[in-house]
Figure 1 (cartoon, rainbow, N blue to C red):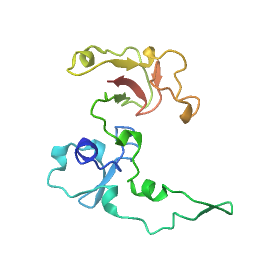
Figure 2: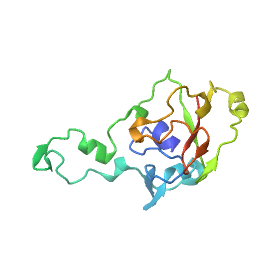
Figure 3: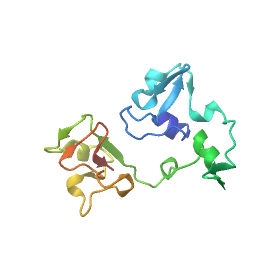
Figure 4: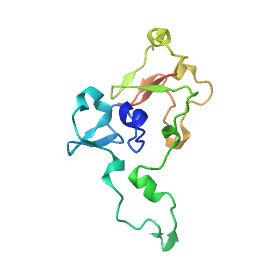
Amino acid sequence: MKVIREDLRLTGTKEACSAGHCGTCAVLMDGEVVLSCKYSAADAQDKQITTIEGIGTLDLDFKNNNLIGAPIVRRDALEKATGTLLYADDIALATCAHIKILRSPHHHARIRFVDKSAALAAEGVIDVLTGEDIKGTNILKMAGDDQPLLCRDKVRFIGDPVAAVA
């Protein structure tokens, strides 16, 4: 995933769950669909990798979509469908700090304690945040009223966010 997105700057392949459950990291490897977040660069060596950018354009009319009888012009539809539209996560800034989200490997579990010491001792780490560090409302409003930014007491599915390492 790092080689595809950061080294080759092929940003159509996305990383969402970091665990291979959501499929946003899907690529073709030797003609088979694989989840790139589950493969190291060493495992992919000497394989033919095709990202969404290499699949080609779609033979669809994105200029004149119809919704309830009214034509809607979607200027970014082709770019979104082919993975070439840049999102904020696709733009690399040299002086920007990066955050990696630690996600739960468990379907349903209680969070008793998060030991930050090893991460805080690692070179280059600025800080580690958990649900306990979030003051005020710990809810990601875009996802509904029950999705925390970082889980505090329990996780409810594989991929639930537990900690943020900057």
